[in-house]
Length: 123
Image (tube, rainbow, N blue to C red; front, side):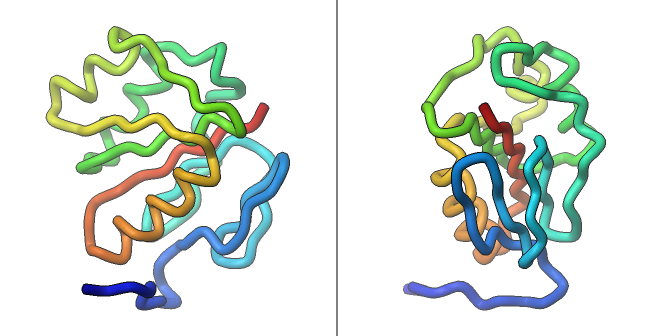
């Protein structure tokens, strides 16, 4: 059983998080981002959890992940299932968690070789 990450310098991993920011591969971000193992995407148009709509979730269809981890900030929140129905219909798992939990879970799943995407929002 692996108990530590095998760090590949070509893969993006969360290296820190705190109030109002995350650090991915030692680069700090203070705005909503999407992290995939190969890159950090900043073109996701979401701004706040409360403003999420169906189009914000449909963005992830093109990435074809096995699972989407949505970090909702310091508060654990859930979106209405109708908002992410297209992802569910495509067989993509959607998990809602706090941002720190999403960062940790992404690193573990990515290290296992899973097709994981983390979407990070701030309050």
